[in-house]
Image (cartoon, rainbow, N blue to C red):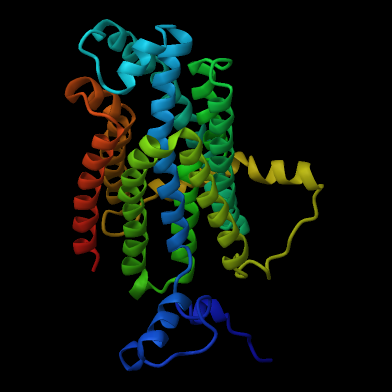
Length: 360
């Protein structure tokens, strides 16, 4: 009896990306090269299209919060708040200080919500995704959360004086947190690419995925200041929302979940209850820590621990700095949104160039 071979295990790099082998890229004309590149692109645009509108709306949301803190919460009046927005603070240092203090206090609990809830969810999402082989939902849910946030920001702009800054910030952070936000989409895209990529190409493909994420930062930040100054809050949030819709459509119709678990016997469970039991499986937390910290050859456990420490030391300061950098630049250098977006774009472009040079 002949044994059936697993096509994904046998040809992990090519099978999910293209139906038949193609001739070498060096022998193709320009349009054939474009087709060749397009046929090998999977989740790279997903991460770039997620990061860019998220960063695009981030600066506008910070300005909206500052304006609400001044006009709604502290009630300093249109003349004072208008001068502060135009960075004419010569006679308004007290008001600027009070606005900054209020925003800093709000930002403190916002950061807690933004990190604690996704961190708890990640303990279950990773194990559930590995058991079921479902990576696509790890991309669609965070995108949907960001889109809802854009719509809420538009509503909070329309009902400017009715909603104080605390509720504005809460609505801004709650849906990205409940859907996992950046954490979940990074998990989904990296896991998907690791599943379909051969060992020889994995480092390069993951490096290109990281580059797409890095490139999304300067594009979003560069556009945000200009759009905010010349078009206002509505257009910034609307443009960000449209990018999220496009990204959601791309994931829905262009990305397919893998079939490597189709042969695994499935237990029939009640729809909602079965999903919750399967998702919130506390055994997966135990398995996660066991896999992460189990002993292995070549000091595997030590290397895993060092990598996690490096990630914490890298991303912790990055997100902490990013959350307060704009209000610091306003206070210290008297920058407006355009000047800050130019500075951020320059900083992020240099990082992107460095990352591009490091990709093998």
